[in-house]
Image (cartoon, rainbow, N blue to C red):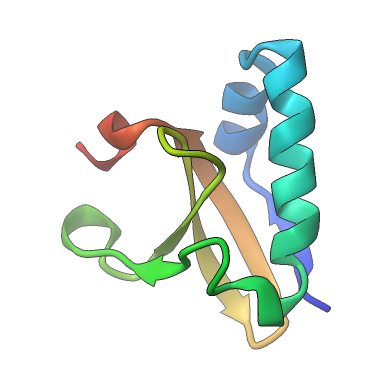
Length: 86
């Protein structure tokens, strides 16, 4: 099971999401904690300014960007649509 750290920026962005969507985000984070689910969530390595980071899908539009702090610990950095990559 992966331990999750929430970056302050992620928490601010999360609080701005609509209530119903926040529930979906929490559900996807719970699924993400089990490494065997990473293929389902489309976990992939990023390039550019996020070259040391990875991302996974919440839904068709929204992604969560994270980085590994250790083998079993990740920091969730940002959440948003594809504009977060700019």
